[in-house]
Image 1 (cartoon, rainbow, N blue to C red):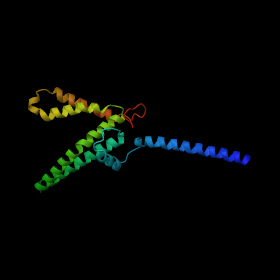
Image 2: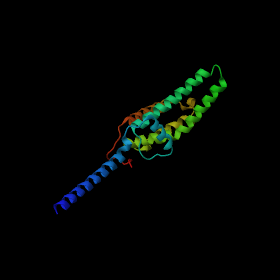
Image 3: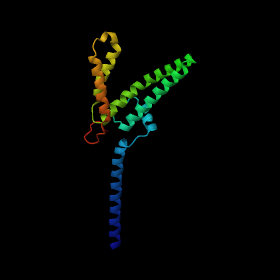
Image 4: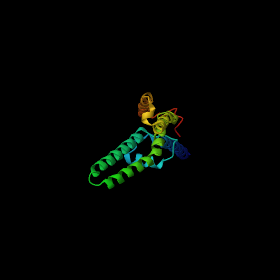
Length: 178
């Protein structure tokens, strides 16, 4: 009889340990998105989540993409400047490829910015202000603007967004987390 009680106690302990391990693994799965993201993984997520405005993006994921876009832009510009004196046609082709690249990354950049704002606990509706400034700069020519106030507001809003992108992840009480 004592042997059966001992095995029953052991099996209860085993079940309790397994349940605890499962709950820990569920918690770690949920907090997986806050782990440091590598450069390659950030680029993969950037293009994989092309139209995904919901969810979150960590600071690392956002800044890796900023670095990627800066590297591509600078590399393209350098290639154009180096090749242009000797081969204008090739330089024009590289410039055209860079313009096409910029068009392709517009949507995922906006989705990434909205996910980054969500991660910091802010609404992505803040990006509409930037969109208004962007459309204004496209529609109204420079000579017709007449006032530097809009340009100063646009610049100030860019600085505010930069500061918001620097905020740490808000893990508790964040309604944007899944």
